Every structure is written in structure tokens, then in C-alpha cells.
Amino acid sequence: MERVVIVTGANSGIGLALCERLLTENSQIRLCLACRNMQRAEAARSALLTSHTGACVDLLHLDVGSVRSVLTAAKEVKTRYRKIDFLYLNAGIMPNPQVDIRAFIKGLFSRNVINMFATAEGLLTQQDHLNSDGLQEVFATNLFGHFLMIRELEPLLCQAGHTSRVVWTSSSNARRSAFDIEDMQHRNGTEPYSSSKYASDMLSLALNRQKNSQGLFSSVICPGLVMTNLTYGILPSFFWTLIMPIMWLIRIFTNTFTLTPYNGAEALHWLFLQAPESLDPRAKYHSLTSGLGTNYTEPQRMDIDEEMSEALYKKLLKLETVVRRKLSEENADNKAYQQYLNETE
Ligand SMILES: NC(=O)C1=CN([C@@H]2O[C@H](COP(=O)(O)OP(=O)(O)OC[C@H]3O[C@@H](n4cnc5c(N)ncnc54)[C@H](OP(=O)(O)O)[C@@H]3O)[C@@H](O)[C@H]2O)C=CC1
Ligand SMILES: CC(C)CCC[C@@H](C)[C@H]1CC[C@H]2C3=CC[C@H]4[C@H](C)C(=O)CC[C@]4(C)[C@H]3CC[C@]12C
Image (cartoon, rainbow, N blue to C red; front, side, top):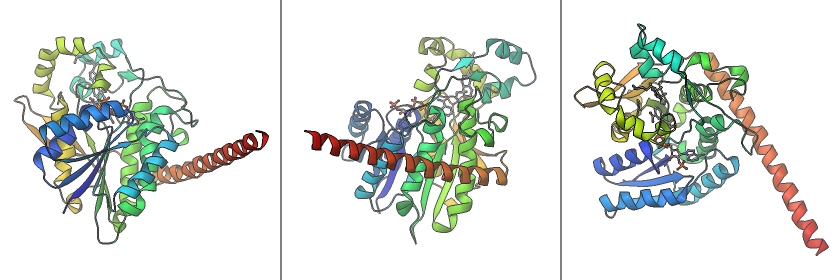
């Protein structure tokens, strides 16, 4: 039977590579590219159809960082499909990244050097800001918009006799010490990316506890260090190209330098082939590439405590209520204003 697969952030990088791999290595898939930029989404769709003539590739407009857009997109999904087999929550941002050069040089001469290259611990900070919904942009995009999407799509994801999967593209940059449950949006820190990815790891665990009995299973992956628009925002692409031989060399010591979107999508595709019952809800599945270029997936236990993941889940539900209330008030205001305009005309 045809499997419905939705991928957020599918118009470039790891998301697009996943789509390419899904179509190449599996038949009977109905793929839905859920994207913010529809011009790039059209281009991605054309590229996929050129290499896979006759494939079923749909487009869906989704700005995962906007509450209104998520609700509209979810409504559209519910009219188009009767079930969802896989929902890949892949869209993500890292705005205005800054590398701490001193920490990098110090790290090069420390015993922690391999870990530094794999996780960027202590190296990266970002500048975040409030979006038009009044939420921190990184939190809204990397976590909350996806959470809201799952909540809206629950009727399709939690169906009797059917198993659905959600897969989060997390990161090895996710770090417990960057996350504060009293400041889940990371308003007060300088590592919103790390915080949002740690939150997605916790949310995945909470979702498994809450929803496995209803047929919904959640997993998290790390794609490794991949050359995409996201990494070109950290250092310019010509610089990455220049140091590519060094990166291949580093790959001999850390298999986390997957480098290409195809390699980075390894764990995402591997999960597609696994039975959900065989997966560990506490594991992060890493895409890895050996020095010789062989791809494989390996689980690593996440540093998460159940109580905090449950607390996060509850806080997200509360925020969802607040956000929905605000939206319906705005809608009522708009309606009243429109009526006033009509009457005064
Ligand atoms: N590259 C790397 O080394 C690593 C990446 N990751 C994660 O992988 C995921 C994919 O990133 P990657 O492929 O590297 O980078 P890209 O920038 O190539 O891809 C990011 C995708 O997310 C989309 N996106 C961003 N914001 C929104 C939004 N508000 N609504 C809808 N779509 C949005 C982008 O679309 P648009 O065209 O609209 O901008 C784009 O398609 C991210 O979650 C990232 O955090 C994790 C670890 C390492
Ligand atoms: C000689 C070069 C390799 C120098 C590059 C230094 C830094 C700019 C990069 C070193 C480690 C990189 C990263 C590691 C982990 C990634 C993580 C998994 C992710 O989610 C996003 C990107 C990374 C943080 C990435 C960013 C660049 C480095 C800090």
C-alpha cells in the first residue's frame, strides 16, 4: 500500500537528500514536501521528478515558525490524506551563528578535540529574536511549530490499527546545560539552537510515553556535520571548499563528518526501514561516515531525565492553549474591524 511521507524543510540540504533517497530506494511512496519557500519547493519537486518520472510528489506551503501557517497547513493535510505514515520534522534554523575562535584554538590542543569537532560544544553562539507570534524564532521554528503540527495532525497520526512515525532532525549540538525548563524558549541565553535541539530530544521521549499506545512512535537523529545552507551560514561556502581536504582528514578520527546531504540523511532513511517496536526511545540515531566513505547508523543514549521531558510536554501544551487563544482573539478583532468597515462604507 502507498505510504504517505511528509518532510518539513524539504526544499534543500538534508531534507531534499532524504526525499531523493526515499524515492530511489523505496517504491509506493506519496511524498509531500512541506516548505516555506515555494519557489525553491517547486525547483526541488522538478528535480525529484526528473530523476523519478511518475513519482507522487506533492507540495504544501508551511512556515513552521508561524502559528497561523502551521494551522492552515495542517488543515490542508487533513483534507488531502486519510493517514500519515511518516512525518519528518526536519526544518531548522541557526540564525546569526558566531564561532568562538579562541575556544576553537584552545580546543585543538585539548584532549577533548574529537568531541569538539563532533558536538561544537562551547564553540557556537547565536543571536535570536522574537517573531510575529511573540515567540523566540529558533524555539518556534525548531520545536514549537513542529509540536503544534503534531497536535493538529493527531487524528491522522493516532489511528486505531495503524502505526505512524515522527522523526526529528536533532543534533549532537543538543546540550542539557543549554536548556532551562524555566526558560524553554531560551530568551535569556546565547545558545538557542543547542537548547531547541535538546528540547526536541526530550519532546520525542515524552511523545513516546504519551502516544505509543495510540500507534504513534517518535525518534531523533543527528545527521553529523553536513555542508548545507545552514553550515554556509557559519562559514562561507568557499572556505568550506578550501578546507575540504582537512575535513576528510578529520573524518578519519571522527565519523561524524558526514559532509554531504546524502550521507547526512543516512539515519533518516535507515529509520524508514526499521520496525518502530525495535527502536530505543532514549536513543539518538546518528548518521556516520567512515574515513573510507562508508555510511552507517548508530544509536547513542541521550542524556535526558523523564521528569524534565514530562514537564516540557506540559509546558508546551500550556503554551499551545495560550497561542490558540491569542489567535482566536485576533480573528475576532479582524472580523469586528471588517464588519465596521463594511458598515461605514
Ligand atoms: N547541516 C548540518 O551540519 C546539521 C544540520 N542539522 C539539522 O538538519 C536540519 C536541516 O538543515 P540543513 O539541511 O542542514 O540546512 P538547510 O538550511 O539546507 O535546510 C533547512 C530547511 O529548513 C527550512 N526552513 C527553515 N525555516 C523554516 C520555516 N520557518 N518553515 C519551513 N521551513 C523552514 C529551509 O527552507 P527555506 O528554503 O524556506 O529556508 C530548508 O529547507 C535542520 O533541522 C538542522 O538543524 C543538524 C545537525 C547538523
Ligand atoms: C578546520 C575546520 C573543520 C574548522 C571548522 C570549525 C568550526 C566552524 C566547526 C567545527 C565543528 C563544527 C560543527 C559541529 C557540529 C555541528 C552540529 C551537529 C550541528 O547541528 C550544526 C553545525 C555544527 C554545530 C558544526 C558547525 C561548525 C563547527 C563548529
